[in-house]
Image (cartoon, rainbow, N blue to C red; front, top):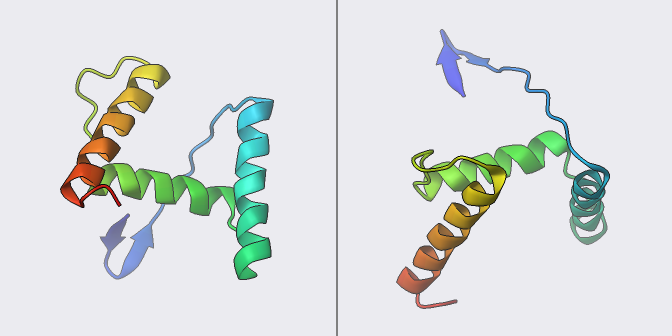
Length: 87
């Protein structure tokens, strides 16, 4: 997010997800609710995933599909785990 004179600038994103993907987002939110008392919204979940990808240094280079993006995230996560000693 960018700051514009002290105000946070946000943008609306509309996405088309399948039933299985929506069910998974619902499960993440409910699991959080039952374990922490706070239900994660779709926005919280998506923002967390985007923040992770940004902090992990994932770029859009050579990504041409959701599958190739997933593969790149998986490779980056493996590199992070190796650096941290596999924990």
